[in-house]
Length: 448
Image (cartoon, rainbow, N blue to C red; front, side, top):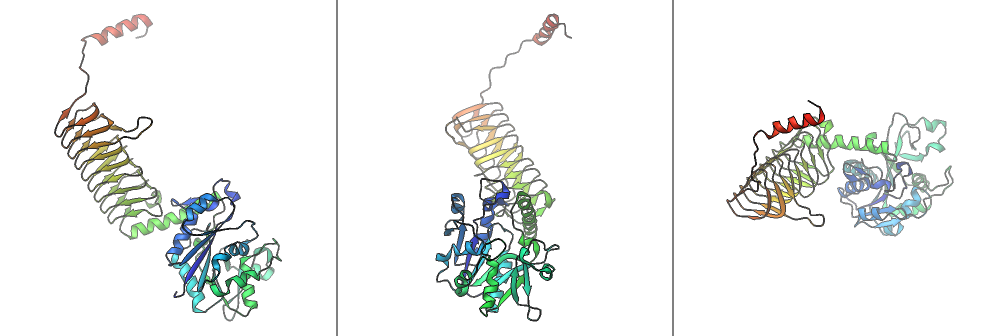
């Protein structure tokens, strides 16, 4: 691929079968909206311009694809009509124009490059991605010349004659145009068909009638899945998760039970990371080398350093930064907090809006009381500090390096370096009181 590449992404569909107030293409696969998967695949081909065709009243979609320009298809009169909605953006383009569908998030950059390369190599007017399903019913058929192999027509399923219905080479919808021909080709398409729409697929017939060649490139069916319903969304998720798991393992991470680990499109796992079963990575997670993520943990928008030990049953919420060699143990929740190198938060704790200094130890059941109903306040725990079990740190609070907080304490304000703080109530003991109480209650209730 040597010529310039521009991209048009069609995203104006209503997606009524999704039964959702959200535009169909904004539904997420591997933590990212489908439309952004498509845009990101095109970006890997160094597209010089990417345009998105949207429907009326889709502000969330426009925001999601920014800074790429959008064009509105007010009346939905077919796929060719949708592409021409971006006519102002197509004017003056040279090289290649790739037309993609925002509800088809599984096409890889490698596949799209093969299509663009095939169009360039033969200087064809149009190149089309095709696939071979077990059952071609419902798909447009790609008709090719028996001698040359060139694409001669795309016939929609409802328009097929008996012979064409036997063809199992089908249209994926993805097309690449010679930019200089594109507008004239699209404007020559009419709507004399069963649906009365302007089919983008008719571009092949128009080009052929003008003496220009077209070509089809075969792709694996799994890449072609278009999402029009919730079951199809789940199918796309399953395919992409398998890809992400294989990539993670090929790049040096161990997934003990891959099928139970869920990754996001941007998850970054270092070398020799071990991920135990039933772990979920939300968007924005980076994990350093030699770290262990134990079973049933959930991580999102956080950074975990090298050699850390997370879980089991740990939750790392957005803004968490876990240092090298740090430990976040079972049933611990971290939110918008820095756990510095070698620090330990081993059990049953909540640390939010805080810093835990290097090699500090947080005892079981410790919580940072960071919210007063109106404001979030910060807790700062110094390096080497020791917080006894079942302590409540009422923010704002500052605990000096090496300080010790006795178990069961409720701490406010500032604690000096190397100090010991205890806030336990004075012990009261009444010998024999419990036995006398039981005797009294038995007499009153008649219960043993």
